[in-house]
Image (cartoon, rainbow, N blue to C red; front, side, top):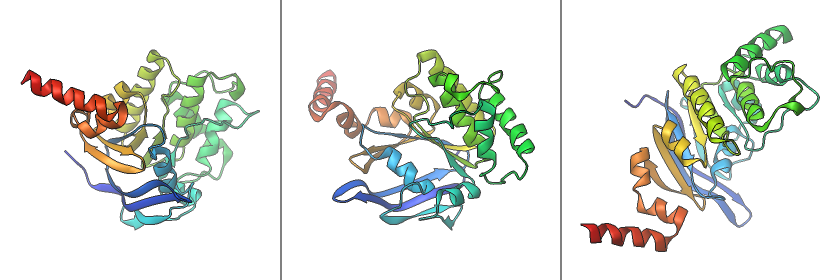
Length: 256
């Protein structure tokens, strides 16, 4: 059952000179769902998250969070409203422990902590939630890729987000690590956080998403359930090429 709309974009566009990274994208995110965003490299996926959270200025279009327009707000203002995000390239604060890194998020979230002791308490809770317990006092330079991805997620969660924007948190991980992160994301969602996630690992994105939006060359080419997306010829063509898509269709007709 689809919940109420919590985030929506109208004619969202982002140009870099003559390059149209996003062109007239319409999207809607419903409270409590996991919405997947997929597409080939350069499709505009990360750009979409960046214009939502204010990391990049929008060229034109409008974005609304719970019916309040957030178009063009600075990232810290968007975070204060209840939208936090992770980044594709993880960059923890060097020379600091896992706990200290996670606590930083608590200082800039929906309900910013005024005391560092309380920020640390919240960070400790989120570190446990993303299965990093025991790593609190480890310097971030000594964390492996999977642990740094989890730290990025923990820091975002300390902001008490209503919506969590995830940018390829499974990239570069082993199959077992991917399964672990999938479980963490699903648990975060079960606790009430709405999630919008970009991912290239098809098994993962199809396994956790209720709906999926497909971008290609900055345009939305499909939207639907995972089953609908896997059968969409335009999506197959975007990933595998038009010739392969036509061949699949011909084989299907021949089989019938």
